Length: 100
Image (cartoon, rainbow, N blue to C red; front, side):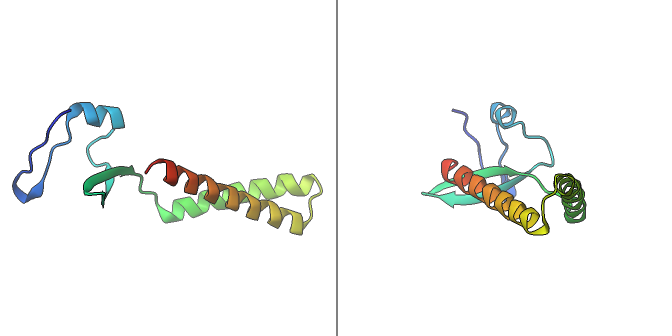
């Protein structure tokens, strides 16, 4: 297991084999926290809020047109959306549990 040294300004260099395993590149973001006395760094993606909302709106519009073509009511479409949101939240919660 490679060791790292704390440099001036408390900087450390992530060993090459670790960078390769995590597919990290210069400029990538890492979330940092302490867990059971250990430093944990988790790679994170930063997305543009406007771009994300535009993408969601586009996907929603396409899904709505498909569901409307299938004859689904407004209430059924809302129920499908809420069910999908709940499924995604459950998947994210489960993923968070297994990553700890």
